[in-house]
Length: 135
Image (cartoon, rainbow, N blue to C red):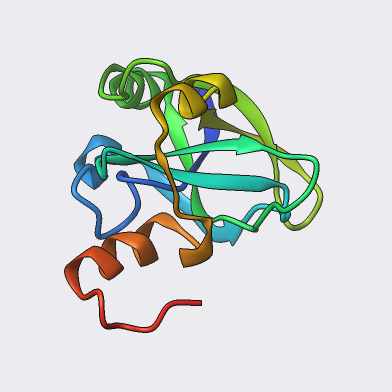
């Protein structure tokens, strides 16, 4: 039996996003979202940074994948510096691993809070068409 790991994806490796090839061969379990406990930031418009907040959080949409250890290692090898693996809370109350950014790092760089767009894909669509409505 092959060891696997379930992982929440909410950024540039989502279906339809530029880094989705980093999940090649991984099994998509479901599309879901977090509980409204997080803020979402654009890290130089290349990928999102999220962290948990005590108030003013949003639900972040994403996908859960079943990854082999090799697929997981490939995904991690392509992640930017500063990220760390942590647990997030999903809308059904369960927890799962995801990549998070330290709040202090986000604040020190002054990255843009994109929470009002409701997710990474929606924000990237806004960059392509700023006149399109957003939530």
